[in-house]
Length: 324
Image (cartoon, rainbow, N blue to C red):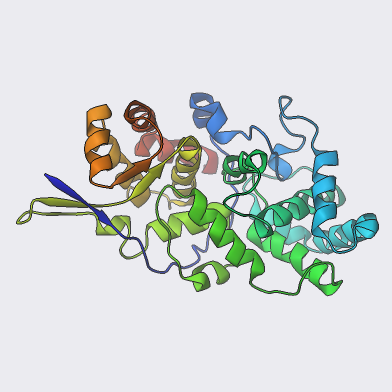
């Protein structure tokens, strides 16, 4: 049987879900703790304070934020202005998270101001060839729980632009974020910038999920009987892929409607896990340019075998318990 790579392109639309940041079920956390709990960078109320094994980050974040704003000598003043804007967004903030935030709004605004400013700096200054130490933060930034929703980043960005602290560019954040997503998504994403720009209250993983389900993406998986070819999208596997893909699967399951049994990304991953059972299978798919990886064939096979433990029905059942 021949395998042929399939390009991914198309458009997406906002899912319309009430929440966009979800709590990872305990069963998933226990099965693979390093895939769902940040190892280097805690972001947002679900991971404040950060885990004991993460160094104190407040001074580090402030140092990074100083590089981001045009007038670092006014950092305290600007931070308080951002906090005030977030305080006015109390209901919006709480509506983004699926768990009740038992913190007063001033404390939440303080957390989100520092973390949000740090994340804005990271995304807007992101380059695929940047400092390797900063690159290690990428998997943490793409975790299900470890999030500052896009809509809150826009509140912060608007405040900075109004004070001329950053360039007044409406689409800069989203264009830069698209570069970040393209560099870390296991599956190729659309190059249409309007997809990223037309967003509201969404999780950073939302873009990856919608792009991979786009026309010409994993929905185009097919078998041509006459040519005896199996058409599959190209998947990139690296050391961080297991974290990103697991969180993509968890996000898709979290968004699933009650009673839903069709999780398209999960079905695609199930298919790949069936196709890849050993290093020899990896070698075949690598030769067909379906799998792109700098890892050894054995390591890639272990990657897919590890994903088999996260079954689609287990994901749905885990999130159903949280929602009920």
